[in-house]
Length: 120
Image 1: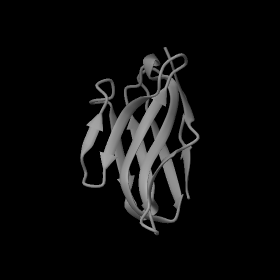
Image 2: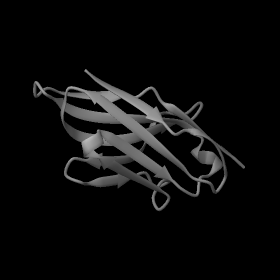
Image 3: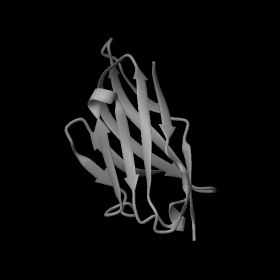
């Protein structure tokens, strides 16, 4: 089993910045993919940013140029730096990882979510 704990959400004014962190723990052999998703009230969960073990990056069009996903393999951490935040970025943000564990089984995990609220 792998546990994910997100932090860094909060209330920020439009144009401000936040840095979300996701700490992973458990029997982790390798991260296959890391990503951030978000879900606004009344909307479906959507991909914000995605990073593969090979370094391939993918961003939602709404995030390009403003958000940056990164990782620290030594600390089993994944981050989402969000700049120039807009009210439409308000959502619950979820960390998602696909992990190969020490028994060489791969599974997908979600964090509990962290609220980001951007005021106009």
